[in-house]
Image (cartoon, rainbow, N blue to C red; front, side):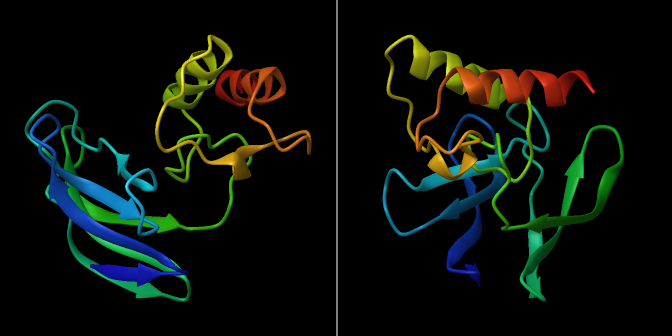
Length: 133
């Protein structure tokens, strides 16, 4: 485990994605996989996690580049609904789940883009616009 700006980061295997990078704020709902770096059950095997100037650096492997250095910031990212530090299609799917009445785990309200304190249509439109750029 390594603490970066109050968030604990660690490598774990959930039995589905293989060994990947996870983070936790200390609660069950706030413990989520950061990113499925190597899709499928093989896992990216994140290792050598180190904190430098408020950022997390670690080694991990993907199917395109092999093992390489990765960097992650813990800064709030508007539209980053799942809290992975990036905006991707999973954020859009999470918002769609919220709009359909589901209550997905690990939703970061810091992703709010219009200041209403909620995750909704404004965030979905923002995410889709960012993905199209």
